[in-house]
Image 1 (cartoon, rainbow, N blue to C red):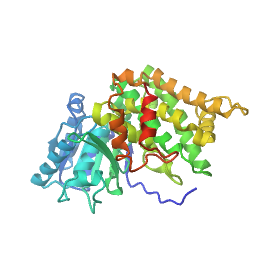
Image 2: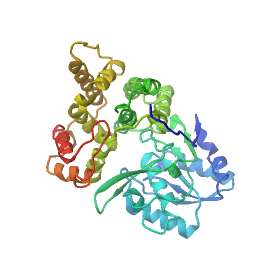
Image 3: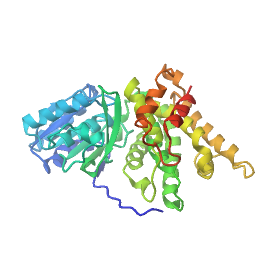
Image 4: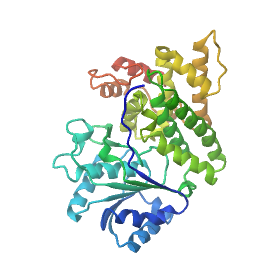
Length: 389
């Protein structure tokens, strides 16, 4: 187990109608805020109105900033930065899913910075400060509600890049599972895959003697396998939705990476896919991950056997570990299929015409390697993409 420092400052406020406490939570930080939201669903559901009523009761005024969308755009972030500066905003409240929260985080980074906020995402600068962010979560998926990460897409360069810094961790997150009842099945399934992937990216590494974190990860994954199938059948089951929502936060707040270094190659490859084709993140991961597994499993076959047996319920063949590992990979791919997820590029209507370009960007023109379990060069990434066909 590696040495580590773990800190999660996000206050989680979990349960029914907890969005009614937003004003009290915000008042601690500011009397005037920016509300960052999406493209209309929070208003149609009545959530926006309830949050605003809570703010008004607490004596907090707000400026509304809508338009956040999946694969959040740099251009919108820059508009939000300018709005915050004009209105002298010192706190951001995100109402929505990961894309809304990531947009708010990027704005929070950019307001006190004189340069282009994209500098942080492409590694040119490190921030000194950022505005505080709070959120009301409506879609459990990205874990952004309690993570240090934000992922932004630069439309001009077709790059989708994640950036992590403790300054980006929200100061509070309101999690009411009832707010997720009306999510479409496809969106729910994409979120479930994303939650599982945040755990599996950390689980598949070369670190040994991490039994405690392994068991936590395996428990979360087994819960998500069970609940992801149940939620499709019973979308308004509070307990099912509650497990998924809490698992989403735990999967990406850093706890499951303590003592180890995750892989993250599947995420890096999917970011290039999402930047070009603007697909749902969970859907892209469902395509990339099984292909990545089949390409790298021999480099740590014990880890893949452990996953197959402990998580996917495969009966271990002690004389043929490769058979056990491959059966585990097949089972996770079948789960994605059962959830209605794509598992091949053809399911997304994507051909192989830009595979080399994606691999070139992902590897920074073959100057850096991607992933930690087995570091991938440009040609490796191309081969993984070919396995998705």
